[in-house]
Amino acid sequence: MKEKLEESKEEHEKRMAWWREAKFGMFIHWGLYAIPAGMWKGKLIPGIGEWIQFRAKIPVKEYEQLAKHFNPVKFNAEEWVKVAKEAGMKYLVITAKHHDGFCMFHSELTDYNIVDATPFKRDPMKELAEACRKEGIKFGFYYSQLLDWHHPDGAGNDWDYDPNKKNFTKYLEEYVKPQLRELLTNYGPIAVIWFDIYSPTPEIARDLKAWVRRFQPDTIVSGRIDPNRRWDKGIGDYMERGDNEIPEHRIEEDWETPGTINDTWGFKSYDHNWKSSGVIIQKLVDIVSKGGNYLLNVGPTAEGIIPEPSIRVLKEVGAWLKKNGESIYGTEASPIITRPDDPYKCTAKQGKLYVHVLAWPWDGELEISGIKNEVVKAYFLADPDCRDLKYKQDGEEVKGMKPLDPVDNVVVLEMSNEEWP
Ligand code: JFZ
Image (cartoon, rainbow, N blue to C red):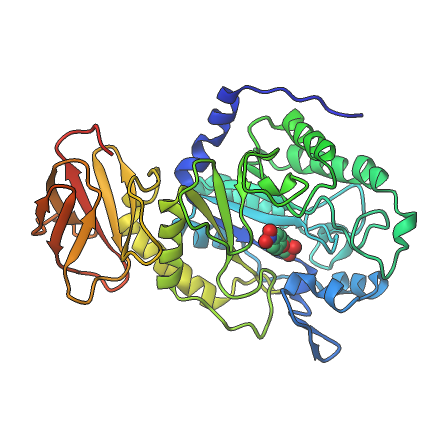
């Protein structure tokens, strides 16, 4: 049966309010693929870790065996949620079912789930939902609605199943929808359902969205519910960018960049290409200055541990946010147009312009243009005493300020009145 959906702009605005304030969330890719961790039968399998079954064309019967060995005894929901909270993240989205089809939650629809098929026998989604509620972090599920390499009628696995014999409608009606019902009724309030690449048709996308609304009208639906990659308003509640992709300019519509700290989503034992916390902070600032959110991934191990290099980076980002969070959370995109090679990016709140100086000019003096108001005070946001920074204003130009921090010196310019920005 097809769901009907009509909803007002007000309902949409209300649903998006927390998300627009939040700016920064934790993505978690966790599943059976954490066991091979990028290696199959002694071979390094190139590409992102969670795609190993596809890349190595592992037969379902073989891949399934991994479940018997999945026993993440070191998993601790409270610890994970604390890592997110300490990092300054406001929401958490975790893979309930990725493309490999293995369910990381207890499902009545299949035994291929963490409670029934593994020695672990616990439902980590229950524990995480609970821990998030306790810590005030919004909780959401990633759910692969199109690709399912395990289900005979799901898309993507043509090495085990004949694509001509697949019945996608059956998979959708008798599997995907009932599973979404489980996710939306057994785990308390669900902040986001993060559908991924891509619903086959606009009709199916709309139907899935209405199905989500039926159980939890406040749940935000990701942009990849749309049939195609799109950079305009589609069927989802916001636009999802490509992985790690940041647009060149400010975008008015709500959008999010999903990002990795190294080069994989699911854990890979030999991916050590970690971005530094400085790079992550600058990406966060870039994204927020253009009006977007940053959903930053961690890929826990098969033992249930978030890799130490990720934790270190997240701690450092969190420490920076503790001092400079005012310039991120609840801000608006930059009222000033900056070019990619400008040494600063901006965010704004009423009467305040936050100038994130990403690379202090070599001559040591910062010059900002496009200031359409009189500046009455300048100071570093990280300075608890808000000591005055020296500057000169000449029309729309503010010049002469000197640096403090090697990564991002957030300078606050307070305006004489609140009409701009
Ligand atoms: C998808 C998944 O296939 C992948 O495993 C991971 O979960 C990631 C977050 O999302 O991969 C994509 C989807 C879209 C683009 C790139 C990778 N894109 O639009 O550029």
